[in-house]
Image (cartoon, rainbow, N blue to C red; front, side, top):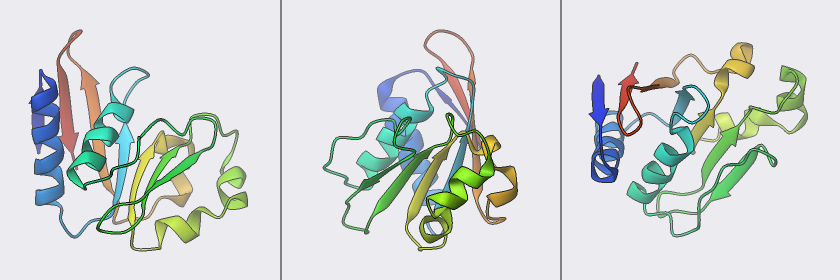
Length: 136
């Protein structure tokens, strides 16, 4: 599935489409270069899941937890980890196998720890305001 996004409204629609199309999936891996819009897309996914908390990048904390009517939502950013052992140290398995939504930025930093059933979201920069979101 591919979605071209030009506006914030398109991004909200893309988030809704993804959640509706993959309603049974809970782990989503976000790939894209720095500035592609991974965190922004997670904010829109959380909004679609009725998160009332303020969402932000967990760059320094590695994981943020948000409350929603569907239960906890976990937002990961592995950009700053040095190796997979750091993910083990904070107990990534408890999150990934909890049945809760997990949105994972920079999953390429932990390739051997990713669940097989996780859905990949690739965000490509087309130009300053346009992104292509590919879901696999």
